[in-house]
Length: 226
Image (cartoon, rainbow, N blue to C red; front, side, top):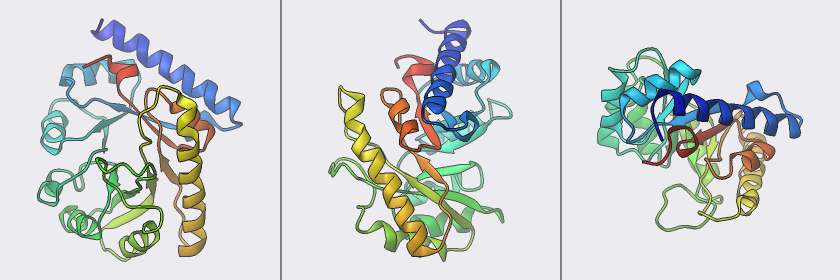
């Protein structure tokens, strides 16, 4: 089932679960941003979710992001997928956060294309060791973060990760804990604040919140199956 009413009900359920998970973790729910992942869903679905109260939306295809921006009014966009450098011009300066930067070359291209504004970015870290996923390793994250800190036109705000898919949400906890520990280490090593931890999706976002997530990326639980 989809449509405005179904999306509104699912949005409200996700919002309530985020609040409850935050309270259980002793955190302020306002410290967790729900990024409604609208990839492959029509602009109408984005408008329905926005009418229900969603404010932040995530896309992982640059051209789809560009087309929806023109149709969906005043919402905050996030780019959450792997981005090719030749598509950076469609994203830079158009989103509040790029979640998956894995090279200094991409950061440089985003900085050049940002149109005079500062583009916030996150370093994507592959903590599950999956060959099919992008992201740097925990061992190389510090070097990339240090390089990005020196790039004009971008601001490094933190880290993101995506655990291997598992049936048990608890199986994601070690990955989420590892990202938080890595972030804390990098803040000390680099002397830079890295407040953002983007981790957790429809199946495990409550675990991610317990582990310190500031941004959870929720698609199916809001928009239904594609």
